[in-house]
Image 1 (spheres, helix red, strand yellow):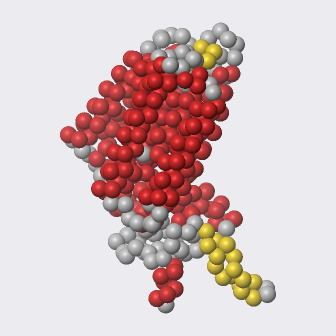
Image 2 (cartoon, rainbow, N blue to C red):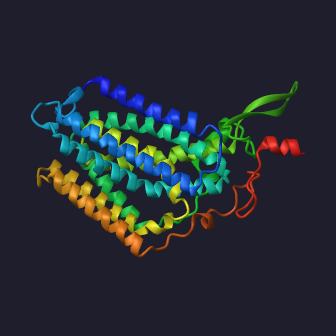
Image 3 (cartoon, one colour):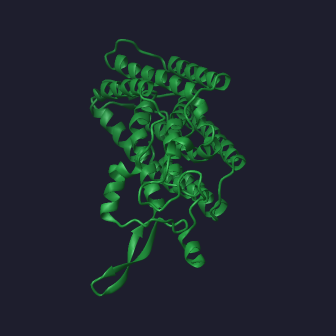
Length: 372
């Protein structure tokens, strides 16, 4: 596969992110539901347009796409050659699966934002930088795992069992548990390395605060609660990536399709969060459908490794599409009950200086100083 296709895709994503933060969202503001729905539609349209490129690129084998790759021993296909239609179908299937798996991730993000009382106008900034970190992190994980699978085929069994375990955990463990940020290992480690201000300093992640010293008061660097929110969002994405990346690899091992479908799903996650933040509890049946999707993909990886059954990609796409469609339809017709995230968030973390739920949002430190 030509390196130009990777460079071109990286440049395309960098352009999207620059337009997002540098042009359209230069001034921090609270994202309205209408604005979020518009952005969600835009990102979905971009992904659909990219699937057209995938079709023609694989159909005509541009940049070496669609040629396939044999395993290290040369006796089997690591991922076989594929037509444009097959590639576009697998890209859209992976995109939909990753997008659907993001719903639980969004609920966790909502709990983090509410627990740390992140002002609405700064949540976009946290998610923007969180998504940049997620894109880099998932890119490294995907390229590393595809290389490992080329030499260690038995990892298919490990990933298959991991997906089945995740499915069982999703079925048994309820998602309405509170999140105690103070007990997080990431937050405790961050507090040991850096001081943390009790209040927000505008949209800054780091700031300078006065601290007493042997020679008098001096200015030291400190993290703001906005940085704590970013660290928790990145940690949450890492945890979800451990489940979601094997899921897409159970559909196809083509690294370009795996990476691009993941990245486009991540890019649309931020706008989807703002669009669905108030009604994520209505998608409980979709979560149940995802349980069966993950279990199906896990079983597929195991039986294909042992050559028990060769499940055609068309059958996989049909099964996954049917399960997700049933979950969405059931959620629309009979919404059920995950408790509202705002009720679950409770009061602010101890010692944070942040108001409890229902109180006024925290003022910026600069505003507080001017008012004092």
